[in-house]
Length: 324
Image (cartoon, rainbow, N blue to C red; front, top):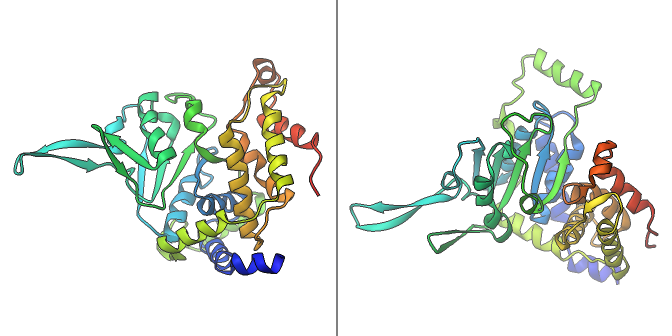
């Protein structure tokens, strides 16, 4: 049976592409393997990513590198407090020569969109992303404009700075497949980076990064990832995890059904990256925190105690029997 599944889902191309992408990333970025792995997984799982970390830890750089490893259209939107929805999705304008109205596409019309400092725009502008992130389309003046696949939003935000920032609506943050917390590099990694810089290398020379595959190949890889096998006991395991977030005394808001889908999609992507055509409990454990940490809300009491969502998620997983 396993041989039949392996023959049906050929993951050789996926494995090779992942290795090549890692190689291209590390031409510029030293370390940060966890962030890179989850960016690649999100790409394969066809899901959006929220990168959270202090300035200077390569969040924006990683998104730009991700775009360069795939031959796709890329755009960057710098969110600011005065940014309008039309600045994101586009506007309908009157053409004097033709006496007709025409739609001018905004920067969101690209295959990979970097939304830098997403929490700097108010709710009105945030709402401009609701439809396009979930349905891959934009509706302007009653006319629907579909996005060309693949379509991926990579957003960044600084968790420390509060001046001039806005809290992301729960409906928006739930649309991200993963929330990746980007940490400082280790001392050795930082020393390696500084040695390269001291030797005269340009740290942000993106021209050395080459595309690994085309948009058509990415769509094929995504189709293979969706076909990854998930046994019934693992589906129940995912359901149990998410259900526990909904009746946990430390959580005011639990995971939505979209959280269950995110857990499965992310686990499938990591299984494919490991060269397997089936999901294991370890794949679920790998993605459980990045897939859930932004979808749950702590009770005020737990927040005052300094508890983090990851701690509650770890307790939930530890309290459940792992399928074998």
